[in-house]
Image (spheres, rainbow, N blue to C red):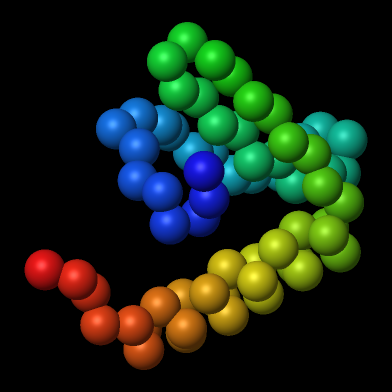
Length: 64
């Protein structure tokens, strides 16, 4: 199992601020709910990791 292993699971992702000053990633799939709270600095680090991954993914040629 890893980042390149495909799954046939659908999930919903919501991102937003909480009333406690945290940033929440809320994942829901197959009746499971996973709230993940991060302080704003951690959230910015995660956002940069996502941007870096997007830049790298643009350079990958998809398999057919």
